[in-house]
Image (cartoon, rainbow, N blue to C red; front, side, top):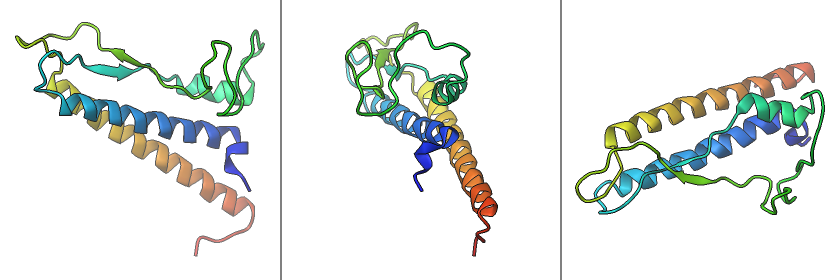
Length: 139
């Protein structure tokens, strides 16, 4: 049984991938906190509820083309699951031109870790519910 055929499970998997990539970007920022001229980056935000709606097709009306497989190309020619890093706007710069604020990055890292834990728990709960529905026991 492929769990990615279930829209909610596919959305949870995509969310975990985004959070993992977000953690990598935050870690890169922290690693370059003392690098002169380094500009802090962040991933474009992800709208989880919009992701679920997109996967279920419950947006009411579909006005354009969309990808439904990670190997498909979107209308702009990029892959369907591409993540875009953008420079953090409005950050202070040190005298060396570095815009990484360690306190902010550590808060972002803790927030990402908390969100990842929540998504993992949701994933486990849904798998448990499916197992119960199929009459399978957990031990």
